[in-house]
Image (cartoon, rainbow, N blue to C red; front, side, top):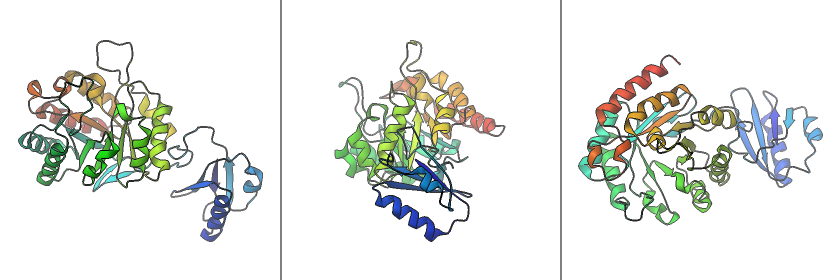
Length: 332
């Protein structure tokens, strides 16, 4: 249920209403916009007298929300959420280019790529230290050592770092990481999501390989219901019957997620296609669809990459793509 307050309502009277609602055992999510304040009621609202609340002279309207996701619902929070990572802002008209290798392999590799992608316009550095791989025999990442190398690259370039966390047990190692990524395979690791909800760090939440948009939003809800509202949604392709690409990029997910939720939405065309030459056109399509950013895999030597070299752009290719994306955004 949402309660839309009238403009310029006395703050004390609004707080009295909030306290009364909380006294009924409800959670109250307050969204204060430029022109309106919306109270989102979370919990069992079946016994709430809508007519009584609507009759109050400080209330504009009362509506029931049928969707099971509440905190990330645009009806609860009409204005776009802007997630801040240092000086970088994502959402609400702010576009972020995130780039870097699938896996951190060495100091020279990650620092060199970080400098290259920053020069091309990237504002955050991605890099995998802990890698969930389909085969147990594939390279699993440098783990804690990889995190330290990412921090060196951040110190060299000033780029905030984005890297994947796979286990609650590893959380202490991520204290100095700027954005924690939840990969597709962990999208419904609810214990991990709850724990990340207790942190104060931005969370980049990737859509699962075969998950619906509602399931993605419910996973975001786990994080937000635990107290962390800094969530970035990521469309990274889903598994379909198509056999020419690694996954199928659901470009329609971008405007639909923006319609359903106030959270920023970015797109990962690298994992979606699995083929480097398809990354630029899919990145452009995602930009045109209204994405709030892109996350692109870039490697200085894709032929010898320890992970996902086939989908990685070279630094000069990323530079060309970034220029095209900026040009496209200038006319949207």
